[in-house]
Image 1: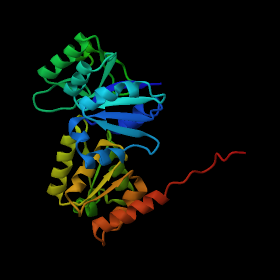
Image 2: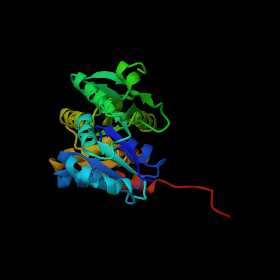
Image 3: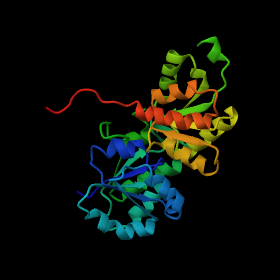
Image 4: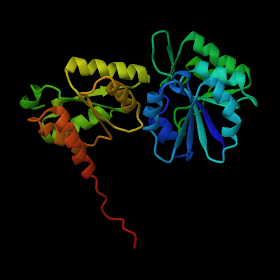
Length: 163
Length: 135
């Protein structure tokens, strides 16, 4: 066991993460990397209330997450690392060693300036470039909202071929 | 829809994954004729900040102070909790089921926030498992 999934999801901790991935992977902890949440006690309490009591949640800004990542990677329990946007995952990927193997795009929702690429992924031009930059670092970038769904390769995601 | 429900003002919002809200409200309507007391909110394709903004807008527009959501860990529940932080007179019931909503719509002579708390207890108590006992 280790960190099973590095996921980008703008809803952060929600049903798909806690139940959809949490149950089949038997997740015991979530590492939520978000500078704003890491600085807000009440938001941390909010997200803690959303997970079952047997699941731990750790909140970090990017710098602290990078420092602690080796510990989480060697944790005998199954865990998931979560960011709310691509830029945060990219900052993490630039910092950590050994590098990230794979990143899962799990949900980036509609907003002005974004174009729909999948049912659950909308990207701006800048965000698409950020994903390409991640891939250029050797990270395998795919999109998949739930374990039973098709794992969409980055090129198909960016081309919107699965729409 | 019955003539009674056609004129009933919404007393609560129901929000959840997929078509959860409209499905549950259609069941309430079929059983009680009081589905119009509940306002469905669907949040497909929205991020959590937009869900919060939508719920807040619908609450203000309808003048309701009760939110029912489907799942404790769901994004509608998370967004509703953020709304609650600035509004002490709002009640959130997470994990809503059909018995909860039926109790709520029939308790229309008491304030909605009181009715919601009572309905939550009724809904919790309405879940039973029958059969399958180990031999």
